[in-house]
Each structure stands twice: as structure tokens, then as C-alpha cells.
Length: 208
Image (cartoon, rainbow, N blue to C red; front, side, top):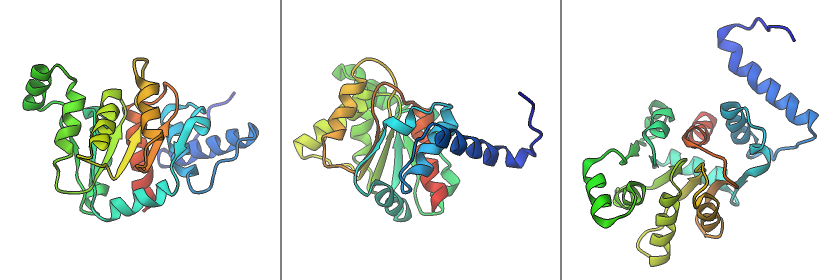
């Protein structure tokens, strides 16, 4: 193994070349429509499992692109996810990114009701006066609350990126969204994270 001498501005390009080569070597063929998202998730995590587990509803990419072009907002369930999204690029289309997890009123209400801040944050997001794309990378209870609101008929998300990571209710929460009628990008299984949620958002933003 030798050190590759690469100009700083070309490191990301070289990383994607390596990812493409290794996918080909493994005999993995990605759908053309979604390959750029899968590759960015692999680039973010160095985990090639995303080539097998990242799942897209019909027409998910074009729906997400149209929402962003139309000025939709992105709501995350962590400040880490919020920090990772290219908000300057999002703003070019009239969109904003939000995370309500650190809001004192959200924390107070969650404590009083005995539920997670993530669940209350989803309720807060549902009151925004713009279309909302949910980018969930940490809290399965966020997905569960969204599903509950959908079942109650009180709110229907425009799009859900559901990639929470962990062990408690993670797989169950993802399966709820997989069985819904809402457009989605879901990573099956336990893997995911706020970095993956942000990577998916950025992949789409960079594709426009």
C-alpha cells in the first residue's frame, strides 16, 4: 500500500472513484437514479452495506428534488444533523433547516407529557407553514410520532428520510414508514445516523 499524492481539492473526487471501483469489484450494481445518494452515504460512513440496505419509495429522488426546488424546509432530529446540511445551498431554493430538540419549551412539554423531545419536535415541525422534509438520523420515536399523526389524519409529511441508528425500536420505526404511503428514503436495519441523514440531504442538494 502506498500513499496517494492527491491535491486537496480532488480528494473527494478520488474517494468517489474508489467507491465506484469497489462496488464494481464486488459485483454490486446501483440503480442509476439513486446511485449518487448511496455513494455519498458510503463516502460519509465508509460502510458499503448502504448499497444493500438503503431503500427508496417509487420516484423518491425526483419527489425530493421537486420539494427542495419548491422551497421546502428540512427538519432534523439532532443539531448534529442540522449542522451537517448545506443550508446555504438549501436557501438558494427558498428553504430553511430546523431542529427543535434544544428548544426549552419542547423539553418542558416532553417532560410534562412523559414522551421524548423528538416526538414533541415532530409536532412542532408539523405546524410550519411550508412543506417539510423530515431528516431523522437518531430518534426512532420521531418516526413513530410521525406515523401516529398520519394515522390520526392530523398531519401527512411530504417526505421522510428515516435513517435512525441504534437498537431500541429502530427497526420497528423504520418498518412503520416503509409500510406507509409517504415518499421515503429508509435505511433498513439498525444502521444510520445524523451524518447519514445529512449526507442524503446534501446529495440531493448537490444534484440540483
